[in-house]
Image (cartoon, rainbow, N blue to C red; front, side, top):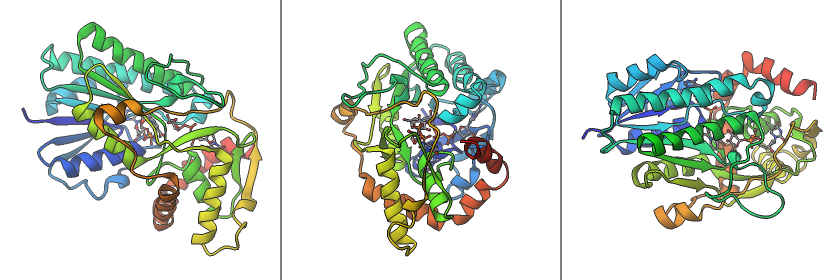
Length: 351
Ligand code: NAD
Ligand code: DAU
């Protein structure tokens, strides 16, 4: 059977890396990139693959149920990698509703479209839902998130992702839909929208602007290079067991403040600045409401069952990432003009 894979959110950060990998690695598949092109979607991220004969872009909103039905039947979708989402925690705190409609209702629209179109014939079909480690809540100084850790989401974003995970599992249990889910830790790398910590910090350091660190900078995240996440998604899409969940993580836990100091050192070197120049920009600002203290993934299952491990550790990954942003000044300038300014002002000027 010919494979036609619907990748939702393919114009976003992680989605664009997944689209690139699938288009290049599987010339016999048709790859349909469906994206609403919200503020976070950027087709420029895919300029190197968008002429490929096995690639089609569809501008559509997953909140539109009829449009989802139409896409399934028009393109003959045999599999889904679902990444489209509202993804930024701070925005979910400021305005939760878009997170409910896109992350929950949008996911159900896709589940319904798959269910209707596949109509009980699940041979060779797959519905892969890409989720986050934030559904497990917040850890203290010790311990890890396992696939069996009970859900305990704390922000509107993580709650909306947790709801969508539950619904995906319910469609597997109730209707037999062949689903698989992964819960991944914090990604970093090229093409990330500069509302997220790492590209925001790199951009501010470059422009000698204050680096906003929430609270005391003691919160801990587990960082994974985005290309390693895309490799894991490829593996799980093809070899993950139906109905299963796999945790994906980087084995790279860092306190935010330590991470920022590492970035500052790299930037001082790359920009030929006197050591300490970039670190002088560190500015402690009001903490995020309900800020989760620590995330840490135990990724033993995907390692043992599917043989996946991250290929990069943070030192090398951060160097590559800084190089990419310094080499793509125009990409950053285009994104940070216009509406981004208004967002930045609202989010940071009054902190
Ligand atoms: P992103 O915000 O960079 O991209 C999201 C994409 O979805 C954008 O292209 C946007 O235009 C599109 N989109 C948003 N609403 C849509 C709608 N209603 N209809 C169609 N398209 C819509 O996000 P990201 O960081 O690449 O995250 C992708 C997925 O991975 C999300 O589901 C997120 O929850 C998950 N995830 C992200 C991380 C991370 O560290 N970034 C970690 C684990 C899991
Ligand atoms: O864990 C996976 C999640 O990682 C994904 O599901 C989310 O989509 C993704 O946005 C990310 O969430 P975080 O909230 O962890 O990422 P963010 O880059 O927003 O923040 C990382 C840490 O840095 C967090 O502790 C908050 C802090 N922070 C963030 C910003 C934007 C700051 O100190 N200053 C900032 O300006």
